[in-house]
Image (cartoon, rainbow, N blue to C red; front, side):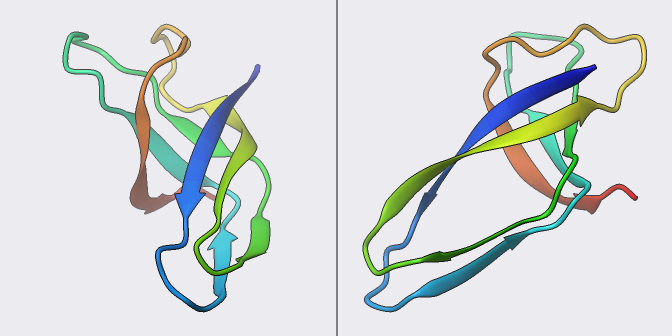
Length: 85
């Protein structure tokens, strides 16, 4: 089943930034009130050039990766260093 997350990116520099979010990037839940959290991985690669001082929100499609855990619903999430193939 597919889910989605919104990722806010902000360029705090005076130059362009080339941003790549690889397919399979893992986002983990950061809610502290839950004992178990579902994690998501992106299903496609995303590339963009973010101009100076711009803020954008990307809508990323994802898949749950923790079998048996409840699906996320308006949970705060953060990217990890992990990419799942």
